[in-house]
Amino acid sequence: MSNLSKDVSDFVGKISKRNPHEPEFMQAVTEVAETIIPFIEDHKKYKDANVLERMCEPERVMMFRVPWVDDQNNVQVNRGFRVQMNSAIGPYKGGLRFHPTVNLSVLKFLAFEQVFKNSLTTLPLGGGKGGSDFDPKGKSDAEVMRFCQSFMTELSKHIGGYTDVPAGDIGVGAREIGFLFGQYKRLNNEFTGVLTGKGLSYGGSLIRTEATGYGLVYFAKEVMDANDDSLEGKVCAVSGSGNVAQYAIEKLIEFGAKPVTVSDSGGCIYDPDGIDTEKLEFIKELKNEKRGRISEYADKYKAAEFHKDITPWNIKVDFAFPCATQNELPLEDAKTLVKNGCKGVFEGANMPTTEEALSYFREQKIFFSPGKASNAGGVATSGLEMSQNAQRISWTRDEVDYRLKMIMRSIHKNCVDYGTGSDGYVDYVKGANIAGFVKVADAMIAQGVV
Image (cartoon, rainbow, N blue to C red; front, side, top):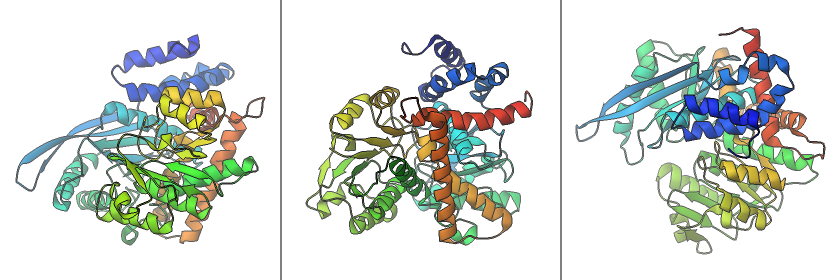
């Protein structure tokens, strides 16, 4: 915290004292405070209303027991959470994460980021996040169903179409959303758009699965267009191998780029020939249907290399797209990327870049888009799904895709408007934070001290 101004340091210290042992949450707060507090100093109404401190305090946090029975008839117990962070501009909106690393700090960081991200989409969505330390990996469909039903039995008391609309996140895909929706419908005896990411047969939206990855590349394209450049021919490193990574790669291929990496918790694939459509289909089948390990890619495609001990950020590339999880890109790898000539980093995951690496990228003045801006396509399309549910209609693929492109273009414009410095460099972190903050802060002030 030594590099922070006194005002920022004092603020972060105050929030840290109230939230001890929550490093992920404090990392998110610090990143926002660095850009927002100088802005607040120049805008008295936000300072007088103490808006930022209020935004750092969740409106509501639920933590609950989730008991369930496994296939061996043993009773298991997990912990469930829902953080309802801010509802100033709309109902709480944010994913559910099922992963062993889930705890209150992780979910508060995600919910805090979600407030800004949802504001940036221009849609009327508040911010929230939830989940459990349950690990769906290695579980049977029946075990996942029993867990989801137990989880939703408690969560259903706190959510609703006009209150809180969860979606999926890590560990919560189409299967889990289906089980969760079924239990909510059973308990409440109503068919309502209380969850997004649903199957097309029961109220889902086209392009929802692809939206985060597509939106990420649409944002990168906006950056390139603004600098009279393009993605065509650019060598790209992508981390992860889930939905975000898969559909980011798909859109990169469409725009003529050359993605060369993909990864999972077991290691990293580097394919110097590039990942083409055929290879991407193999990855989708491997990860979505067989639930296999990415190392199998190198068994099939002999030119590819599998590395247990290096990340995608050690490969010489033009652009990096971290799409796996938080804090996957540390300072050492950031320096390697820049040394190897990387011109831009576009976050597809939530806060995948460590605090030190983020500062380094901004100092080097390469293109850097924070996840709250460049991965907002997922929640934006969730908002579009909510609109379709409310109207009892279903839009075409082209219409949803067009709306997604326009939302990402609008997010980029807002970042440029608030983040352009006197030297012409666009600080997308600053731009995203201020643009997201202003809309929420103005709504909070209008609604009084609540």
